[in-house]
Amino acid sequence: MTSTGSASRPFTLYDPFALKDALAANSIILVDVREPQECEAARIEGAMNLPLSSFDPSALPSGEVVLLCGVGKRSRMAANLCAQAGMPVAGHLEGGLSAWMQAGLPVLRG
Image 1 (cartoon, helix red, strand yellow):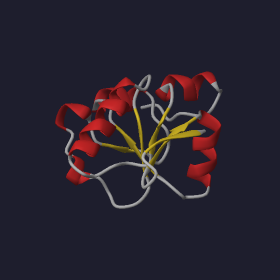
Image 2 (image 1 turned 90 degrees about the horizontal axis):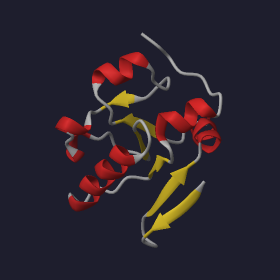
Image 3 (image 1 turned 120 degrees about the vertical axis):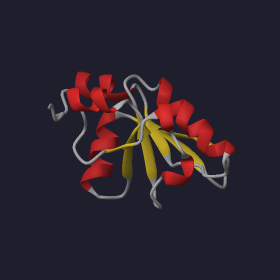
Image 4 (image 1 turned 90 degrees about the vertical axis):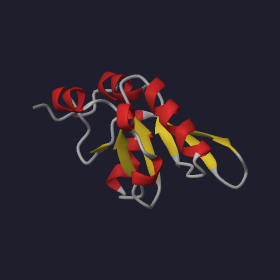
């Protein structure tokens, strides 16, 4: 896990195991920005779905929000939208769900 961003609000690049630990500690809110059909195919337990195609930063829950997508591109785009709206997020899962699955971590299907 590494941090970038401004001194007042760092943006954390989570690796799969750091994200797993943060989820277990209930210290973050995980938001998946993939489309609903993608989430249905495979998702991380506890993640809420706010698709990038209709993404509204004001719809994010309050708290330490961490974004994820398939490989990290869309979650970065969503983070940029949040920053432009003055609603920065805590970070994203570097490598997305692909990295999570490659690390052998569990996903829900169906």
